[in-house]
Structures are given as C-alpha cells and as structure tokens.
Image 1 (cartoon, one colour):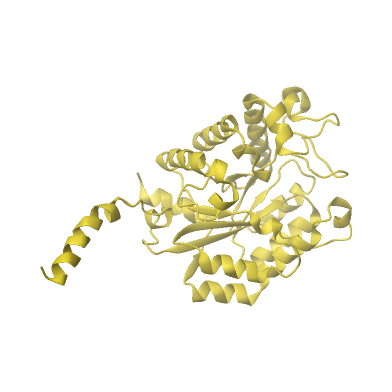
Image 2 (cartoon, rainbow, N blue to C red):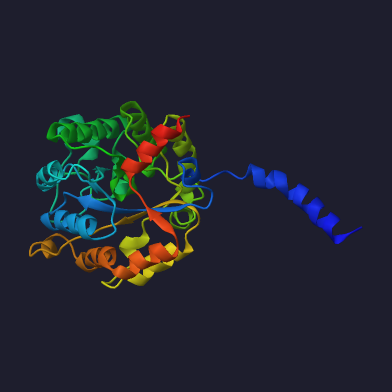
Length: 318
C-alpha cells in the first residue's frame, strides 16, 4: 500500500481524538484556537498606601490590567475615591479571610459576634489559611463574603470580579461552594481557573482538578472562566524579576492566563508592615519594564481584564 494511504488512515484514526479535545476558554470567548491572552492582576489593593500607589502606577504606566481590593483593610477608601475618577479601570474584590501580619491587622467586616469562628484571640481574622479552615464554618465564610461585597457596594465600588486572598476559599470544598454560590447569585465573575491549568497544576496539584468542576458551573451560569493562573510570582525573590515573567510568557499555552502579582511603592511605613518589600517592588518594576511589553508583542499575546471577559461571555451566550 502507498505511503499516502497510511498517512490518510492515521489522520482518520486521530481525527476523533482531535475533535474531542476541549477548546480553551480563550477560544470560547472569541480569541480563536491559538489565542494567547494574559491578565496581569495586582492583588492586595487597599492594604496600605504603598499598595494603592503601586497598583495605580502598574496600571496607569505599565502592562497591569486588573486589580482586586482587600475590603477589611484601612486604605480601601483612598482607592475607592481614586476609582471614582477612573471608572474605566478593572477592579474586583480580594475576598479577605486572613490577617497575616504581626503588627498590622484587621478584623471581619461582618463583626466578631456574627463570625466568631473567623476571629482569633485578638479579635482579628486568623493569621493563616490553616487556622481559618480549622475554625470557621461555611455559614461564617458566606456571611463575611457578603459583608465585604456590601461594603464595596456602599462605597460605590464597581465589582468587576471576585477572588480570594491567600487562596483561602480554595482550601476547603465547602468554602469554595459558598464562593461559587454568591458569585452566581450576584452575577459577579469569580476567579476560578478551569482550563488546561498548565501552571496552576504545578503549584497546587491537590486542588486544580476540583477547581475545574467548579469553574464549569460558573461558565454554565453565564460567567467567564480563565484557563490557567500563576501565583508563584510572590516567591520570585528579589527586585529583578523580569526574566521570570518573560520565561512564563514564552512558555504559556494558548488560553487565558491570569498572572497574580503584588505591586507596591515602598513608602516609609511599609517596612513596619512586612519584610516582603523587595519582591513587591520587583513586581512593579516588571510591569513597567519594556522587555515584558516586547515579549508580549513577540509572542503575539494579547492583554485583557475581567471587564472584557465578562463582556465577551455575555456576547457568547450559552
């Protein structure tokens, strides 16, 4: 038999498998099967004055496209006022269930009597994720989620999406269930990667597959979903982190990738809060570095945000 016959036979054999491959969420949202999309997402807005300044600089002058706000923290009002004069920016809520710094702390917005399992002996949120999982009930988690949304609505903040500070809501199936429940009820997109999970599976293998099932529920409810996420930027120590970002971008698969980072201008008081200033300064420097922007162009990677994802999901329909 001819060589062409065997090639054609092999093609017919492989065709069903190829057809069965699941399309990326980028493709479902209109970017095509080879579309590569990245969201540079700045966490911890509202935590400090320096955190606000860092997010503003990264989004106004750099390639950062989205951010989320820690509603129980003292500097939220400053950023809320900023957003009123910059309504075009993409901002969500960094649902906060921990208070991890030793000398700079905050409590639950629902109030201690309503969520006693969420509070430590100081009356603040627990300092670790493990402590929250050990002490808080799903009902208390939901009450605090709703309290933080209510605070944002009271301030007139546009809530572009929801996500989870320190990943607390992803460390218990019952907590994730309440997170998804509120997201669907409120019709607010929720960060919950559900695609190929190229990077996330390496970081969190134990929770990546359960995440996919929850993400499908969000999609089926008419909300957008990203394919993958990377949170390891916090562990890229030092101020020169540009090469790490470039490597990540060059290695990414087609789909929507959210890169989670922390941008801070190191104000005089920040060292009293935490010793992680250099890594946060490095994230901000990377967002402003022309080499990162050049890599996006060379790799044909488009940047987006949650606002655009929601608009595309609405257009895509069921």
